Amino acid sequence: MADIREASIERNTTETQIQVTLRVDGSGRSEVSTGIPFFDHMLTLLARHSLMDLKIAAKGDVEVDYHHTVEDVGIVIGLALKEALGDKKGIERYGWSLLPMDETLARVVVDLSGRSFLEFRAADRTGMIRDFPFQLVEEFFRGLTNNVLANVHAEILYGRDAHHMAEALFKGLAKALDLACRRDPRREGQLPTTKEAW
Image (cartoon, rainbow, N blue to C red; front, side, top):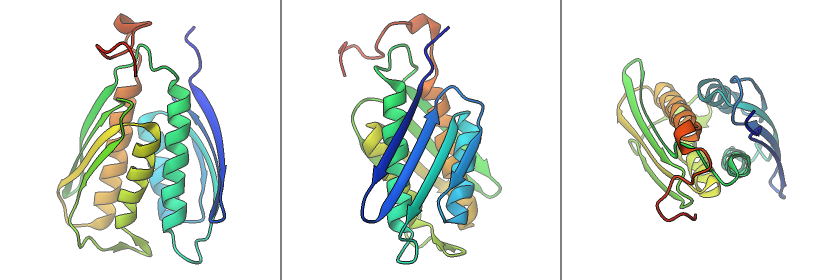
């Protein structure tokens, strides 16, 4: 039986207190509480469609802004995923998704390369989702990308509704991560790189 790929990370700052437990080879179960209802919804979708199990308890200065909580949850999920994947031997490494959400189409591509880079493309003036600024989607992606050490390209190819665009990006990230994290029996014990080191 393959090792269980799981990690728990706690991170406390003057702005946020966050605990995340992540199991890569899960069933998509989630327990999420961040104090931001729309963000909870997106993180639940991330777990369900990646088939990772996610337990997230976050307290932040949401009375000031949602920014710190959203970015820091991204950071901690990235750290947990990095730890859970370990040396990454045997994984696919690359994952991608073209994901529709009604009038919206999102493309998300992931390379678990050990190098962090985010290319995020969406309309500059995408509006609010109730009281949640769409721009915070990018901040979540950046926090996760920089801490899991991945190359991520996320783009809205077209769309009009801000909720649909955010949802398509989170679901697209979930599907891309599901593929990138999968074990390939043909690669057992091998690093998915010709460099033979990360």
